[in-house]
Image (tube, rainbow, N blue to C red; front, top):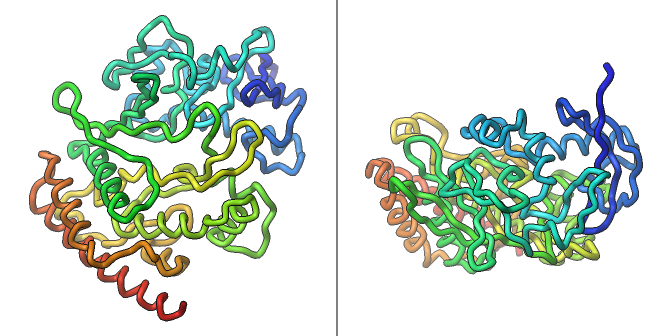
Amino acid sequence: MDYEYKEYYLKHKNNLVMKFALDTEHYIVRKADEIYDYERLPVIYGNNDISLILRNFDKWVEMRGIPKSREDYNVITYKNKKKSNRELTVGEYALNLTDHYWIHSVNENFKWEDMNLFDNDYKQEEELKPILLEGKRGNPNVSVDGNQIKAWKKENNINYLWKKGRGERMQEPFNEEIASKIMDLYGIEHVAYNVKRISNNIPVSICECMIDKDTEYMGADYVMYAIEKKGLDKYERYVSICKEKGIADAKNRIDEMIAIDYIIGNEDRHSWNFGIIRNADNLEWIKIAPIFDNGNSLFYDTDNKEIMNEKKDSFCRWLDCENQAALKNIDYPEWYNKNKKNDVINIIHEGLKKNEKLKINKVNYVVKIVEERLKHFEKAISNKKEWN
């Protein structure tokens, strides 16, 4: 099939990374004319195999945009007069507030200083409505992943992410705030979330962007291919690579995430919602990213009857096992204090009660299950303490 191509540059800040071509009908990456900087490629698994890099980069373009499963996908594409998430992303230069990658056509002459969304204003949405305010270049909301309706807002030069809950219960924003308070209790580094009400009393969670113009977030999927490692399971591979890249406390930070995910029953810890923070100029790995994106927990999408009829554990997607089974990987958590168990229960109970759409019997049943998890967690870690 003959395609009409348009050529683009992939850049990392002002660094020229790759010249590639998209077809103008489907916005699929059809060829890579030249790779200028292999080290700065956003998808680094390929071993310099151009065809493999091309396929993985096309996947990157697809995932750069909002997913087709997002409930307002059709509204957003229609309002912006685009046929697909790919066209949306390309039309807004693939700019986002997660990293420092962006694209522009070879016929355009832009500088990072004039385009990036950290230093410059951008198009914004009014109360999570897919109607863009005019007059600004760049829209980070067409390059944000996840199925929840969400939008970036800049206030007093600080970027905040607003996320709306789904379904009748709209429980995710409350779960985000609950998880934040639990991690505050134990001194675990995390992205802080708060619940706010917008029009029609709709709850949303709000958090501050965890990176800035000098740093960027790289997901676990990127991390897992940063260094070739054989003969290790996923957990061992991840920790080993992070340590080799200079993050000495990688195991402690990952163990904290596994423990919290078990306690709150996180069902959505996949390889794109945890990772590392690196220096955006010299690419040095700085630290494990603060824990974020905890909304799909505490039986967020089930009612009381459904909870009673299903397994009470949750699934750890990145390790392909139940969250309880993932506990076998962690060392004894020095941060855990069993005397704060009642505080955890109160945080969950009071946090869920704020959601008027939840019946009190569900709140009480979720609390009961968390109490059981805490008992199991204490039993599991007491054995580990004996081993130390």
